[in-house]
Length: 601
Image (cartoon, rainbow, N blue to C red; front, side, top):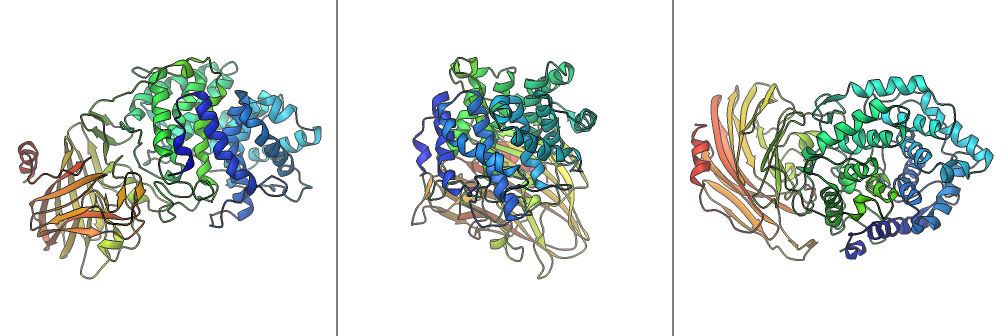
């Protein structure tokens, strides 16, 4: 249990104390000139000097709104970060952040400085010495001279130019207009943006919307039409995104960059700053979604012994992280502190928290997700089709599992030679004779409705599969029609169940139980249970003890799995999967679920 867990996180003062408590352990890690943070020795796609600059800048996502809201806890650290800012932009200082080039990571870190110029111009610009002001402008203005990825990165340059306009500095207004017009092409409806065409994930919320709401907050007078559009789109997506959260405050582990953890609630914090509420989501509901998620995170073992946030998700874990995750990267989560810019008397802070329960079933065609939840909203399961990513690590697992759960999370492949190392939860994995195991990666076609998700995929040459996923309460049916030119082995995994956790902490003994026979496999523990039942086409059940640290949620897991052998030609596999929040396991498939399964035969 980390030391932050005793903070009740009910009030503005509680949130300010958390921000200050998270910044405090970082201060000894500042460099001599205060312009970099050294938080670890793992590598990233960019060098250690840039990684240190990244860590420094990400703290500004908390310090900026704290200063705007006159939180006294910000004053002492701001003295240090102000010094670091002055040195970092000074070409003559040994800790100068350097001249940038195209597609440079430092462009990412400029975004918060653009926001700071808008939000706290006196503190971040006018209070600096004259030469520091010149250096800051010169350094930030580099972003207007170089190419960058044509995705959410464009907002980094937008915010920098907005910051220039806010303090009366020359901005590249033609570039600003071009970037905003380009970002408009990423909008696909119902509040959703895409970062890449077949990729819908958290970047819509903690990037496109977050920055759009900041833009609307500070640029509405100059650009009222576009600002109104940003606000309207946030209202549209808010209820849809709220469906990603369950009763305990857990958000859906899905997609890339999950090491940013409680950035999951940053969208709601930005809504508060921009004054956005939505149908069914008043200030009480928005406040609850943000704070309940943060409360859940503060109970997880995500900090090291020095109270510094680690790379990982539910615990420290480098296996699933991306190449752009440096030791300071997780502090992008500090975007959640935006609401500290609001005074205590703001309606957001005065509102009583109120739970929000989305519909039991929500089809979000733009997100390409079918979201379902238990009757008491204790967990959310999302069924996916049509999302596919590339370029970064473990993206098949992050976007193309059959189902994603707020309770069970998902696992990533450590090595595809064995089922243990492959950790194929919520996937059908196949292999030819003595080959590697292959799961879904891409699709030929896909369809989603409120009743089911279906898609066609090719795990390897000469193999084509039509899959249907049919939810029913806390069960779902899977049906696969497999056409193959070669003999195959198949392994169908359920959700990964933790082996040895009590409460939120690992213990020194196995506390789970497993069951397997010719027609089912199951595992249960106090954190949840999963059973997978064969209906047609499978040979036997077994429970795989997954390789350690393959799950995002727990270091050691069990995966109930069905096995099958498939001859060349056409074969059909049908099974039913049950996910439960407690240790109770069914001994048979319920009649309604069996009826759905029989329709697949």
